Image 1 (spheres, rainbow, N blue to C red):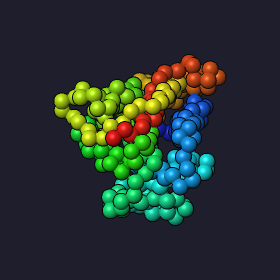
Image 2: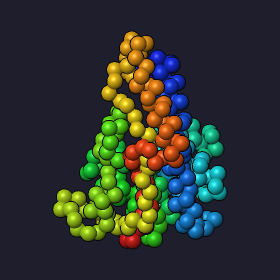
Image 3: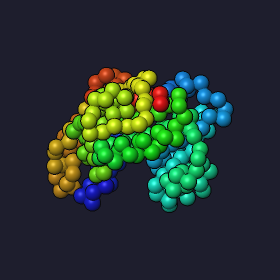
Image 4: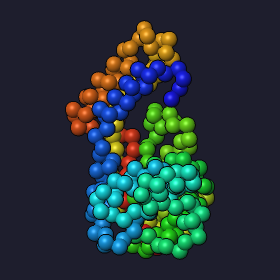
Length: 241
């Protein structure tokens, strides 16, 4: 959080997030995984698991989840918290195949060349007939607020490369996945381009944008997401080959 933002503004940001978070993404993830009819020994790989929020969610519903994370300190923290987690090098040294893979808010951090290699590396370890779940933002006025967001990816674009349609001449995957289900995430409308939202000395005199954003978050929640904008998607893919 910028040093120019006051604690009050930070708290207001959290309030807006809390109001507008109707947790549809978590609900959809559980719906997708529950629809697969997994066996008790089926294994889910949570790729780029971070501190294990999605792993913990899936575990709470009785699924067997193993996380993989590039940050070794986070891996150690997850292990201390009782989660199954491994480093990328440990994953690469193993031979385990997985029934389901989750890439939650991962692919938008890659350039196309790097994403192709990244996805193929993991899809090689997904069982034939297994499932890949991708959750990612769409392009919007909010997308580049995250410092490390590189590129938004659309399901049509992924299908061109991983759908075996030979639609791309520059990118080609030796893995084929087929979209089985999709859900589009929505969020509240939001005012962004006002200096009082960023610089403390202006926020003392102009609280109008902040108040409007709280109102828009409440409106989004009361309308069950109807009054808002589509800002992301979650896709359930089946591995064909």
